Image 1: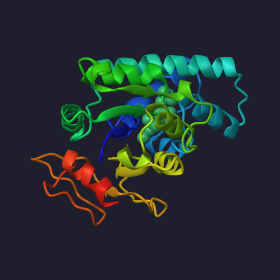
Image 2: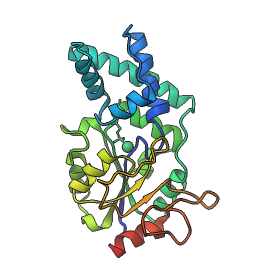
Image 3: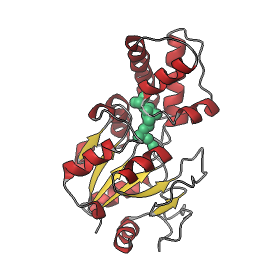
Length: 248
Ligand code: XBP
Ligand code: MG
């Protein structure tokens, strides 16, 4: 039986990466007079490095720039200010079906937990922009600050799973990326993938997913199901998620 859903944030709940984080990083680089610009193409490959600070550090090292960790933190902090302002302007909507499914799961008393590599400074404004009282909806929120190893390492999913003390067979993870999938899968959890809207290629490494969809869908905008398990209603709802776990 479905008892808990673990939600990834970036790319899953909202398309924050290209239109939110990437733009905010570029604004911060400009603010610090760094001659850097992360295009969609560059950022797509940089997403393999999870965590904003790690991403800045990796890029600097690969471009033979020795930035000390204080400066990296300052750039990242500034980036979060720009990100928050993008969020507060309402530029980043939730993805199709997310609001509906979160409310449906709440009505069914399914536990909902946020499990993300992003920092709290980025996650909380996004959630507060879209939900009245986030602590009424989400039972726990795990972010970059809660772990040593970021996704694809399983640490964050193992931590969330151990803390809520439910059997893995009653938990479903909703993720968008290969990094997120690997993290959850290594933690022994079942995963549904909602493909990112800017990259709908299905990785051959996502072999054990219970389901892959283009988005969570709705009555008026049905999901495309890339695996054999299709939903009776044509979109991802409580009945479908529950059936995925029962049939597994
Ligand atoms: C996404 C990430 C984050 C964001 C940037 O994680 O890896 O680093 O790109 O956010 P997820 P921060 O898909 O697990 O939500 O700058 O706050 O790190
Ligand atoms: Mg993601």
